[in-house]
Length: 503
Image (tube, rainbow, N blue to C red; front, top):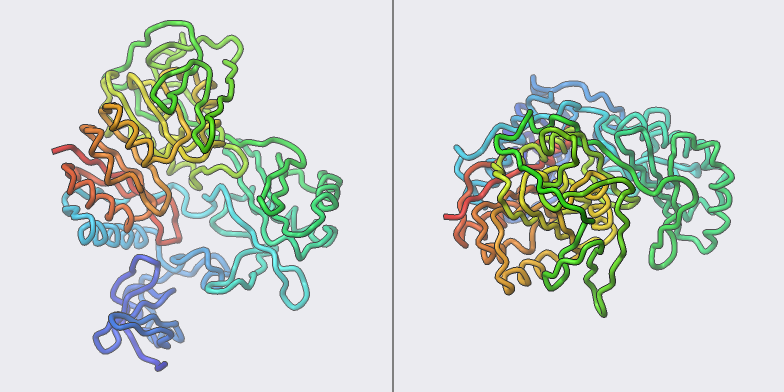
């Protein structure tokens, strides 16, 4: 395909810059608004082209020098060549364009992007790939558009927390001593906000026992690793080699900017954390599991010396209910937000927009480890969390108990099935919170059956958010405001919180 000279007009969803070749849209990665660029057309479709940057004929004055030597080669970051304020501007425009075209959001409902306190060194988890370059082990990330591994030794990842880079260098020093290295394609690293880190080594070979033995013997060479696991076998089982099996992060006291305008008076009573069963029946001290066959129950032990309240969730002596610090855990392999500081912005926004009086019944779909559920539960009458991944629900139950929250109930279930079941049983909620994965909420079209006055949708993908907002608007809701939150500086990705009110 041919070459062309293009002027880049703006950035687009996906991270590329937009130019035009004979009037047809052409998307060119690693360009900036205002660039005059020589490009090679690498793909052409009926309505657009994709180009490869060959030369900057006239660089945009917006450009800055990327701090990472691998930028443009590694596939992790898209926008290190843009100053951070320009990144926020472009993200806001992309978000507004997507939601207006697909989700029918009016411009005056869109708030400015909430920028990240940290623009580098913010990621709390990474996946490092193992490969070979010229016969030597390469440990780092995939090259853009390929499965070739770029070795990041001695430099590390610019957007990863320094502790993750330290752990990666400790593993690098061990690689030459590990057996069957060709059968280790990946090592996952994650940290809490308390300087503890977990590593999961992926192994595709036939003799995991030998690798386990070698890793256990090398424990002294991994001083920054608090817990080490091996993932192997056809069922990808995760076995502990040593150390902790969960990480944690804090929800600081005062996150909600002082006393809630309507603090919930707790009703004192003895009890243990309950659960919502698949039929809606609550049973104290058990977690309900949904699956094929007979549902099982995992007994829960209340924390020693902890007096739980039957409503309001506060511990005695806390002062303002819910104003205390909380600590939330998540197990190895479980999901957590990659940017802890921006995660607090999400939680605070949901709390502010909830406008809680203490009388609300709240449903949290895709609740994970209780990341939003547990901090806001002290402000509502009852909260029910639903999540399809059983280990995360175990974390949610443990987090509620550990933080003295007794009015939150959790169940393992597909979100759509749970919504249908609640609707059939005539269950009603004042607020429904959605925090689905990137693919969006498969339950979106059915949520209107619950007749909630308000929905708060936390999203990490503007396209699937727009699709789901359109569905909800067709079923009797209207969007009142949307807050983009930059969880992922140096990339085009964006988190958001959107409020819908029932018409």
